[in-house]
Length: 70
Ligand code: SF4
Image 1 (cartoon, rainbow, N blue to C red):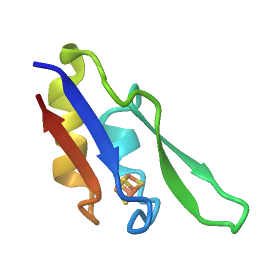
Image 2 (cartoon, protein in one colour):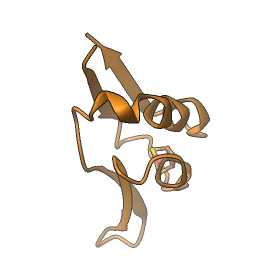
Image 3 (cartoon, rainbow, N blue to C red):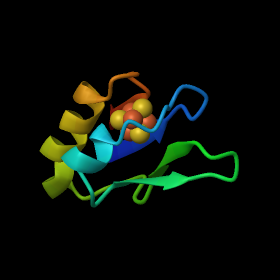
């Protein structure tokens, strides 16, 4: 089943848990305003990354990661 990853940047506070759980899909970068935020590197990651992507969504402190399983 394909995965689609979405994040709500309004609520992301740059904790980097997502990056720790799944660095192939999530990066966290500083923005011009000085705050770090998530960048989704792959919006439709390979199924092999499913467990890591789901862990990132589960452990994101702000619950801003949505994973849609089509
Ligand atoms: S763990 Fe959640 S709040 Fe933190 S950078 Fe990742 S998406 Fe944003």
